[in-house]
View (cartoon, rainbow, N blue to C red):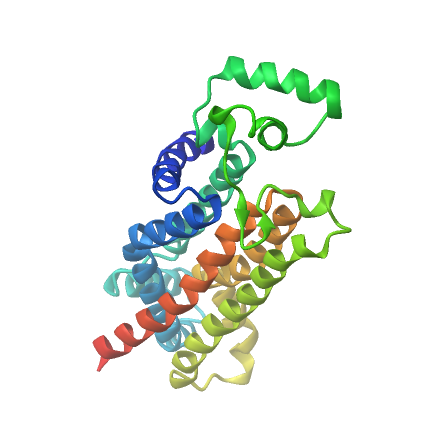
Length: 284
């Protein structure tokens, strides 16, 4: 499945590269196009997150009212979700799509000759043998082929020079060159900003819906909230785990992948501000 999406993304990226003749610029334009395609899903996800925060007060009221009848309480909460046209698992789709994008893009930037340039496999194997004889085993044979043969064979030539950075470089393999950490560090910074922004956008909604709960039922309500707030918990966990996972991958993957994530984060920050304003306007 990941290779399928990597192949599709590769055709789009190669088309853009044919116009701009620069791998970095092509990745930026590809990211913009992908963000526009995913915009309806992003809007729906943010609306769902805000709606989930908004109805927590009603959920607490139900939990307090039916604390002695767990079956009725569960049914009432599920009815509330249905009434609001929500699902406790609606956040799963966005999380799954994010994972698909992460892994598919890793395939794409790791093997650009296969998925982007669609170079014949026999030629890749031939050059791989030559690469192994001169440099030994390498984690990214196609990146090595581009570095070794791009000046000799146009079929495997990709211009990976972007603002003085070599997007084929792998941070973990070039740790003595501080330049390879510029993009990953910027990615970490924008990930932090994105996480903080999302938390701040949702916090006011929660504070508006406070319900007084008796002391003897606080523990029960907290336990039940953990059960029925799976969607929000998943979103929170994803906001923490996704940056950690992607940073780990970015350190062992060619810089082209980190550039994609960085550009994606930058546009995500602007996207969330705009969508949040749209949601607020719709509520007024």
